[in-house]
Amino acid sequence: MALSPVASTAEWPAATPAEQGIDPARLTDVLNRIRRREYGAINSLLVVRRERLVMEEYFNGWTAAASHTQQSVTKSVTSLAAGLAVDRGLLRVGDPIVPRFPDYQPIAAIDAHKQALTVRDLLMMRTGYDWTEQNYSGSPLERLNTCFCDWIRFMLDWRLREAPGSRFEYVSGGVILLGAVIERATGVRVDRFLDAELFAPLGFVGASWFHGQPQGLPHTGGGLSLRPRDMAKLGTLVATRGRWQGRQLMSDAWIRESTQTQPGPPHVFGGQPTTYGYLWWGLPGGVTTASGAGGQWIFVAPERDLVVISTAQNDTNAAAAVRIFYDHILPAVQP
Image 1 (cartoon, rainbow, N blue to C red):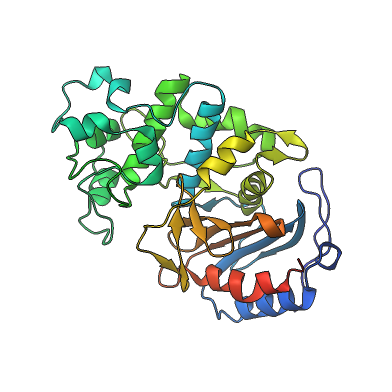
Image 2: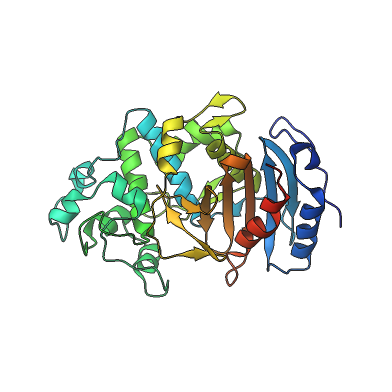
């Protein structure tokens, strides 16, 4: 089956793969592999090169108009929200967390470690929290997601095991707390801040959030839904160091700082070793990645001026898109 033609619109300028130096035969091959379900239940695959949409395919009844769960891709979007606050001089990565919440005093299990916790620690998943998400059932994250309680209180009161900065530990609750910190810094709830400062300028349509109760805090650890086209805009923003269609929406400095990764996470995606920055993953070849459970991905390869998006319902094959990216799409791209 041939690739679907992509038409240029005011929202997305388009081109053919060949016009942007990508072998259309390789893209056609991977398209047919997906249709044969060799990679499980892939729901979308989009390819952008040089800020042009060159491939846009949907599967399993999904369409361009439908918003898709982002799961932990939401964390990388929250990193962008933090960057917007930093760019505007409202937040610093070295700011301590506890002083932002004087109305939550007294805080349980308060000690020198908790008092030392900073925005940077939340961004880098080096919080020191006594936390694990390796098995969701019974985990602190499941307790948070099902407590119908004040998520800020939940995270402020949770015990730290060690000094912040000691080591990487994936803590989704820390990113929810970061969303609250951004709200305290900007005076605007983080979803509304993103709407005004990023989503509206990028022309997002149909973005939605899961909110906690009772205060309506957005679940910045995994509660965002976006169209794949809008995911591609975020990837392009990172690839172009903060620009969209010639307009600088974020600082080059923040994009560079937040995607500068360090070794440490004990994770492998699709056979590829990972590193970690400010809520963005690093993969070999200088690739910056946002990753969400079930197969939600934004791949950014700045040296190739390339962005690839995939959404899926792949609970048992979540890293299938990593193999698609490295085995099929990267080899199709001319330098």
